[in-house]
Length: 537
Image (cartoon, rainbow, N blue to C red; front, side, top):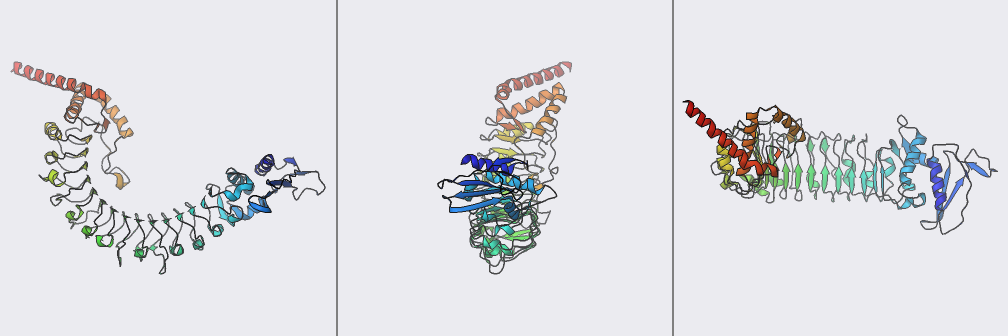
């Protein structure tokens, strides 16, 4: 029986239209029955039939479909699948699709298929797929949705990267829980408003201008909504999404969040790259993560109403004059404030829970004297691209593990070493692009070189491209400058006993074993030069 199944599949997927096979009959009712029937072109009296592209597969299974025949033909496939004939010939496409489905299980077991990936099949239309795959629950494809509305058991649908403009009828998929429709041409959210079982909806990169699911929306189960990279200017009644937990509105044109009641379950809100000018935290009482990068925020309020707020990012507010009460953020654990004209942070008092602070390009010239007392539990501090000359206020940060000071005005290596000695847990240090180090390393690309502003303040632990450039730079150094570089690194490695990476370069065991020798050689040369100068005088 299995050999007969293999024969039929081979015949259906063969590119040879003249392939021949003897007629086979199997009558065992306990097993699937596979029969090759003559083609339309074959004479009824032939003892052997020529199998063509229109061959018919007749399958009988007493286990799955009691004593009934399920007939699959390429004509049947043509009724279900429509392909882009400009890219591929229909017969070839039909055979490829048949082969993809058959690779999952034998034809007589197709009713057991739960998940199917039909991506990259050049499909343009799909109709009545449930007639051959009644048990399908998860589908990945590139097509319109006309043929999906009968797949009532479907739970996961990925229909990204198409030209779909309408999801009319999608509400018939009553068991659908996850829908990914990224990068299509959707202009309205109304069709999704009645999908009461939907949990995750991804409409990223479409053509939405209004976020409106209708006045009688039934999205009671929706928890995750991604509508980033659209053209949304108006948010209408999003508070009706009563159980929403994550909302991504990045890269739209939203100017204000006009809510009528709090979104009590929302925990993650991303609304970067919009036109928001004010933010009221009282409408998001259970928020844990908030990203507001690249807006026009000049004023925010009621952050003290968000008792569990942990991660906040308010980078790059377009040089807006700011009336920011930073004290409202003192309950956070992670804070990104880079790219704003803050100048000083004297108002950051009692930030005892803050562990990560990024405050780059903030036009700061000095730090408050009590900085370590007000932020005592910092483990990561990024103050790159400011105008700082001293890090003395940092010397009591006993939990600090990563310190990034790229692009400041540090000049005195002895002061730096003295203040860093007390940071016993420091593992990562970056002082590149400072006067104290600029001639020792290959230049960085700079804070404004990245086309993606979100990442321009992030200093990578390991940047292979920069390391290769720096190796070239090392080879170009004269011997005196190479010795100075080695001495410079040795001083910090000796001062910070747990340091594992400095200025973008890994510190090896060999580096540590050579530290004392390099420093002693430096001092000997220094004393020797002093003695020589004295003798000449």
